[in-house]
Length: 133
Image 1 (tube, rainbow, N blue to C red):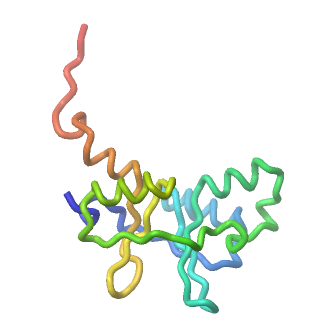
Image 2 (image 1 turned 30 degrees about the horizontal axis):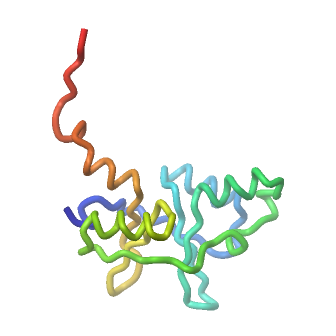
């Protein structure tokens, strides 16, 4: 199975000046665990995850003041839609992260998460679970 078969095509893109609260609200509304952060000044893409927001708030930082740019991972590993799920899982394991931005020639086309991969690999999703009792 390929990344394009498992990825979410809902790509939330935010700017570096969004506050963490704004990012969290948008992520919650779209039901995604990561946002692509596009900085037009650097033409760069980064990723802000729910864990980044959780760590910031948990350390006492104010989500109404802290911006996405301060908490964005810019050293991002990107996946291609044609990668296998094994390749994506290996990249995630090697890098210690749970989301990959999926790029084609024109930019972000999706995000694939560990949850997406597990959903595809899980035997419970392929056949009904027999209930005992």
